[in-house]
Image 1: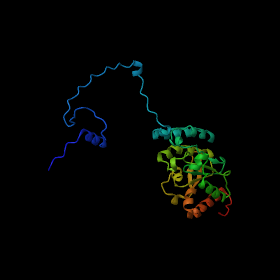
Image 2: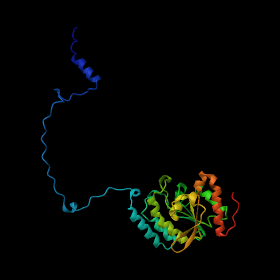
Image 3: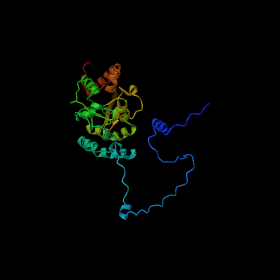
Image 4: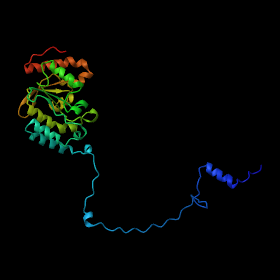
Length: 278
C-alpha cells in the first residue's frame, strides 16, 4: 500500500482556512503541555499614602432602595406604639402614618389608605389590608368587595355616612400578598388608636386576620363570627363582633346567610330596624 503524497503548501493553507485558522501566532510550534518556567513577580509598586483627612473618612455605604430599608422589628413596634399614643386626633394620626418609616409597605404602596365614612358613626368596620383598587383611590373597600360591603350595610339601614371603615394595615402589600406578622404588629398600634379616637358603640371585624389581630383570638372565623365580645380601648369597653370579609363572601356566596344573621345582630344592638336582604 503506497503512502499518500505529502500535501502541498497551498493544500495546507486551504485546510487551515476551512478549519477556521486564519492567523499565525508564531513561526515555531509551541508545546502547550511542557512545563513553563516561572515568571518572576514584578516588584511591588510604591503607593503614596492617602492624606490623613481621606484616611479618616468613612467608606460610603452602597445605595439601598427605600423599599428595602428595614427597621429592627422590636424598634419599629415600639416606635409605632409611641407615635400612635401621642396622636390627639384622627387627622394627627393620619399625618403620623404618612410620615412613619417603620413599615416597608409604605414605600411599595401608591397611597396611604386611612379610612372612609363618618368619624362620628356609631359603628366601625375594620378589614385586613387594602387591595389594588383601594391603593389607587386611597380609600378602603372601593373594589368588588367594597361594593358588596355597601350592599350589606345598606340592608340594615346604613351607608358610608353612618359608618366608619378602616383596615388593620393601611398600605397595600405588594401583589395583594398576606401581610407578615411583623407588618401586622407594627401597624396594630395605629388601628387601635384609630378605634379609640372614633369611639364607636359597635366594632365589626371583617374576616379572620382583622379578628385575630384586634380581638386576640387564635380561633378561625367560623368559630368567632356572630359572637359578641368586649373590646377594651383602655378608656372604654366597646361591644365587638366578627363576621365574614366581603371578599370571602364573593368566593363563597353560600355563607351570605350567616353574614346576614351577623348584620341583624349588629342592627339590633344599634337599635335600628333591619330591612330584608337583597
